[in-house]
Length: 160
Image (cartoon, rainbow, N blue to C red):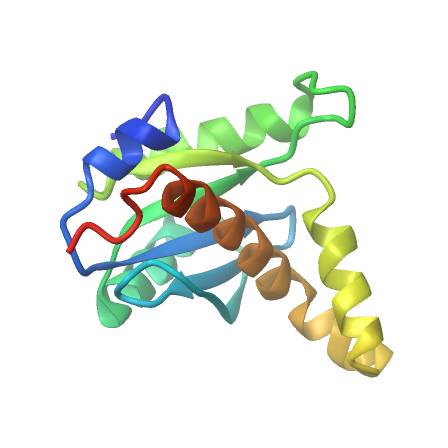
């Protein structure tokens, strides 16, 4: 189920279950997970993209193994808020994923998440090679943390 709002997404979640954040790129999918109380996002993995069926199988197996219930998918809007080809590709990915899982899915504006991730990695004096390896999962962490902060601000992020 693709939720129209973060509020609808939150209402569809059971208590004390982690949620995943995804940074969907052309070549990789960055994955982050929340804690059970949905307060902190932790970058966990980068999935190298092959084709949708393989990518979805890897992703869903990872979410199952980690006990993640919901999915926050970064929506790559243009800086002016308009929709471009990357948004359309992300929405197509979500529609196809929705057919394979009962997990609720919501979108989160990911503008500047990769910039923030890059800045954090530079401040941590991460080598160029290592930054390239982890940038997508760190960006997924920023996407998920933004959604978690919004849910907490709504006063219902914990649902315990």
